[in-house]
Length: 335
Image 1 (cartoon, one colour):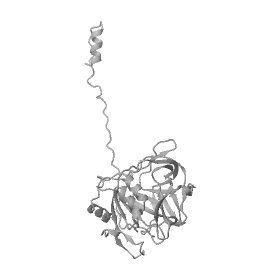
Image 2: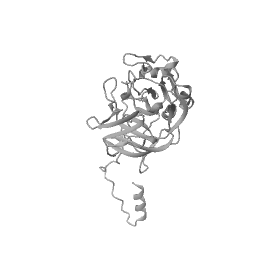
Image 3: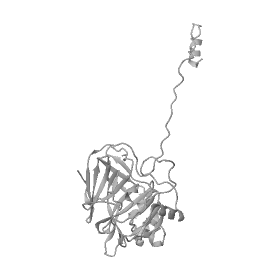
Image 4: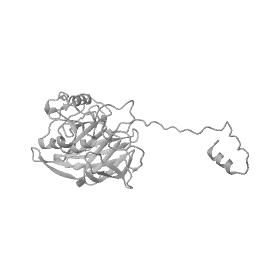
C-alpha cells in the first residue's frame, strides 16, 4: 500500500480499507536516452566507426600563378586563406577526417600559422621552407610537430610534370601523418573550431571580397549541389582532378593586419593577420548569410562565433573555408 494511503486511513474515522489497486494498472513509463552519434571534430559529420587516432594535419598550400592547378583542397576539413607579402594569399589546409594523394603544391610557413595551429591543439604542420623570422613563432607557441621539406623529410617529393620550382613540392596525407608519427607527434584529436546545427540567414548567392592588391575572390552558392564554388581573380578555381574548389561554409573574419619585421628579397614585409582579439565576421551557409562577431582572447582556443543577439552561431556540418579578410579592404560585397 502506498505511504499516502496509509496516512489517510489512519487519520480517517472511516475504518474501511482502501480499494485494492488494480493488478492491470500500467507500469511506470520508462524513458531512453539515445546515445549521441560521434562526429568528426572539424566538420561535425558523423564518424562511421571510431574516430581516427590522429591529430590535425595542416599543410601550407601555394596560391599564386605557377601553383595552379592545386591538389587536395576539397579533402581538407578547413582551409584558411591569409594575406602574404605582395598583396597575394597563401592557404593552410587542415586535414583530419579524410585522406588525399597528392596534396600541394606545398610552400613556406608564415607567422600567422602559429596562432592558427595553437587553436587546433597543434597537430602536424607540413611546409616547404621558411625564413628564420617566419618560422620562429610556429616553433615557439604553435604546439605542432613540424615537418619541413628543407629538412629532408622523405614524405615530400618534387613533381615537375605540371609545375616548376618552387611550385612543385607535393606529398600525401598518409605520408605526412606517418612522418609526423615518426617525429613523435601526438595522436590527440584536434580542438573543434565551430559548433554545428541549424541556422538561417538572409538569402545571398554570391560574396565578393578583396584580400590584397593582387588577389580578389568570389564564392557562388550552387543550389543544385548545395555547396559554394570558388573563383579567384575572375577565374573559376579548378583543381588538378578537374573539380571546382567547393565548401559547405564560407566564414569571413575581418582582421587587423600588423607588421612582422620580416622582409622578402624584394623588400616586401610579411603581413601578420591578427587572429587574437575580436572583430566582425560573416557566415555563409545553405545559401544564406548571417552577420556575426568573432571573439578569441586565448591563443590556445579557437574563436567563439556569435550572432547579433550574442548566441553562439552554428555552422553547417561539413567543410569550411576561413577567409582572414584584412579590415582595411572593407566589408565583403553580398549579392
